[in-house]
Image 1 (cartoon, rainbow, N blue to C red):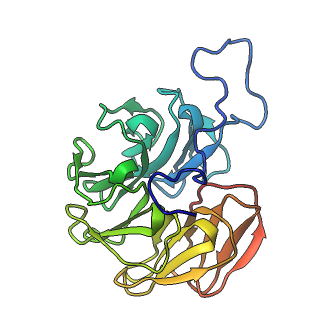
Image 2 (tube, rainbow, N blue to C red):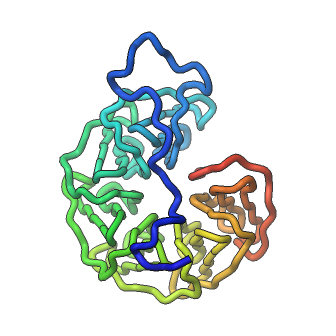
Amino acid sequence: MCGCDACQTETPNRIERTFFPPGSPPAWQWQNPSPQGNDLYAVAFGGARQGVAVGAGGTVLRTVDEGETWSTTPKLTISNLLGVGFADGDNGFAVGIDGVLLRTRDGGESWALHPELTEDRLNAVSFSDPQHGLIVGDRGTILHTADGGDSWNGRRTFTFRELQAVAFRDESFAVAVGNGGTVLQSEDGGGSWDKVSVSTSEHLEHVMFASGEIGMIAGKRGAILTTEDGGQAWQAWRVGRGWMMGGAYADPRNAILVGLHDKALQTEDGGATWTTFPSEYMWDAAF
């Protein structure tokens, strides 16, 4: 596939099924699957038991029992929510299309709309500590906060590629990834960014770190990049042909990747080898 920004024909459509938006007739109540049926695109935990999943039509679900059960929260938007992240156990943010940004101050129990920062689609959010966080999105958008999300400021990235994911290795080092094999890195907590040369031009959808040395990037057509030196160098692999959208480390050697195919991937050696297990289409995972 062409790696240019204009080529969108094979980009996964995240603007999908939206059921029962605000204002729908009250005579209809969702029954199955419970508690709702909209697509879910991202999940994050602010504590050992407390987590949030977000998705189509402004859906926000909350769990307080490690994911055993989930409850819905009142919708504040009908825009699809594509990313969610926590600064600490109480403060979290959800981002989505049309630049929508939601904030919680009570671990996801209630949410408020944040003033609009951009009209660009926002795809992911990540925090290194309670004060410092990053949001990434379309047209090379990167927003940075140093005050726990009270204010956000744009950062120059020298790319107009869609940025799909961002992760901190530590309080100073961060990586953002996106379409056309785009990998950007910051060594000052997200204040400035440099492009990293990697051996793939595939769309990259996910980045994560297990420690100060171990990290992974995954994306389209089985593209996987791994690092053992904290992101200074990335080794390219190709595992199958699946389009991997998300994943999680259990520890530096054990991780899973999920995506838009009927199998998920699991490694027990830090990404050197992989096994598959049956799966529905999945957008994200968390331990």
